[in-house]
Image (tube, rainbow, N blue to C red; front, side):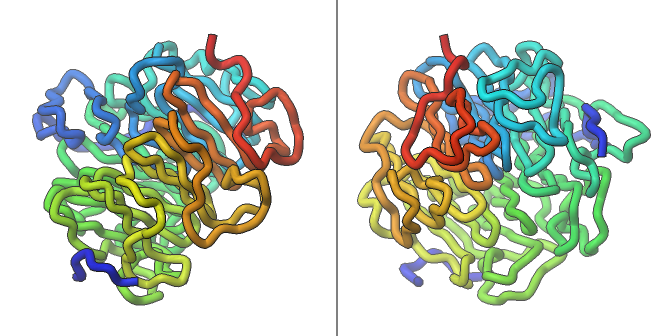
Length: 398
């Protein structure tokens, strides 16, 4: 295991069923013990970003929006009053009054209890203050975590959730990671390639998981000793183990001096952000972790779409790179970028990527989005095909 170097159907709302809840373990966001009465989210580096997600608390000194989760054709946000809102074309993931809208629509089912929303391509999952996870949308691969017959409360022990494509993973307060849904390449980590409609513990990682992220067909987790583990599809090196062979159980990728601040994944790549602000990525043809150069500042937070990556520096600058055919980089063009390009020079707190669009939270807590907009997933009140530069989300903030 290498160490870092300079190497180059119909919709249901369900409560996910997890058995054998752990209690009393140290909370993984570094704020102390969570106890059994709920989950505390603070600091902005606790949970993990999955497809289209960021840590449960975005920080940024107040404002309107705390967290954003972006999907294929829709986007959801958690406001600082803990209410959940979505916009775009819900497709299979319609809920309450949210079916299709160019403006944000409140999800009334959750009241003011949401701390994080993770969005897959045709489903989404919400983490509540109590540590419960509710999922809704398409369930063709079991990505809702229910067998379609019974639904059982998860209990108060989930600290972060990550979704992309057709599978979902969570980290529990005892430091274990559980996954469910599509498993065609072993991305559930249970040693099989059989879809799993109910949560399965990823035993090979063990306890002490601090982060989890999911790509289209792979998953990665970090443990408290700084080791990053990956499993699932590996055709372009997204597992980072030096091969292109799929793995149905976790394999160690590399070890950092401390647990990474954040993980993020796309279609065929994964990135890990060190506590010291260094960023490492692998996949998309790069078979082992390589340090990202060209940003010139310490990175504070990362987010990814299907084929692009964005990073926010400690000074609030936003950099993006990767595919750009829908303007998802925000450069004002549709030219791809193989190296990081400065998008916004200051004032950015958080960034999240959807399939081919991107959203950011700026210092006053308001959201900006850009990229593909054929389904109004940018929330700017239009259905213009794309926006190649950031535009405000209309109607979410007072």
